[in-house]
Amino acid sequence: MSTSARSTPSSAPERIVVIYGGDSREAEVSKMTANGVANAIRASFPEVEMVAMDAKLIHALQRLEPDVIYPAVHGSPGEDGTLQGLLEMLGMAYVGSGVVASACGMDKLLAKRVFRAIGLTVPDDVAILDPSNTRRAAQEALDQLGHEVAVKPATQGSALGVTLVRGNEDVQSAIDRAFEFDDRVLVERFVHGREITAGVLDLYGEKPASLPVIEIVTPKGTWYDYQHRYTPGLSEHIVPAQLPKSVLAEIERVACEAHAILGCRELSRADFIVDSDNRVYLLEVNTLPGMTPTSLYPDAASAAGLSFEELMRRLVTSAWQRAHAA
Image (cartoon, rainbow, N blue to C red):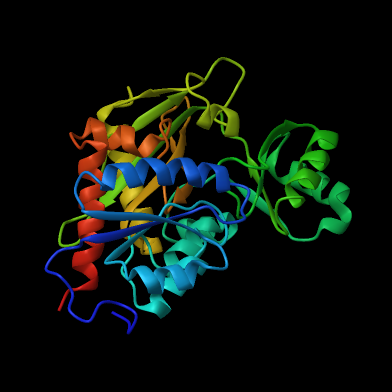
């Protein structure tokens, strides 16, 4: 622990700080996650404070001297390794992945290349790094990937800036829109299929394990975009997903392998598409899954027999034990 931490640590965590907010486009989602997380943590720990991720953050952390920090943040700079690096420099224990895993998981372009390198199946893609000629970039993407694609900012979450498109003009407009969110853009071949997600729980001293696999169902003609993620009633979570046992086993295997190759800790959530032939395509890994009332990870934990309060207790305890391991 740093010189800012209490000189005589207690035998178990007592004071927990939940960090929320920031200036990312997902700040409002972060606040929803933080409120739920803080309330759940209060069921097990005597002192819980919520602290905004702003210019006063370092001063607040040094004043509070938390035993464990829960980063209830989404988007940059809270989810991309920046906050994690700060906490490492301060010598403070925190829930979740470290700097490298956070940075890599947040970067869709980089993460997909890591996944592909170890043999995991991901949709074909084209990286667009130059916003000056998106018409030509759109045509090149269509030539390589076909006329159904997903256009994504490289480092945004919650489906922000993502467009599912067909045809050259639509693709160019989608690329231009994605560049409003990021300075690099990913164009993927669109895979028709079922939207699937699998959480991984990786507690200190235990073997990482996949939580029950979830299928996400939205109304016909829609997909799991920002609105359908965070509006109650606009998506249904089927858990466990109604897939053949062999397919479920493959999803769980890939989720754990992706978690491991990135170097994730405590928790992650991998998103997939399963096509009509039951082929499994890994889309991305979220190193800090949302914990809002409509989020997927808490539903998976519940299906595994973990209440939200118990899940939070275990995550906080794991971070504490990891930080104080001999």
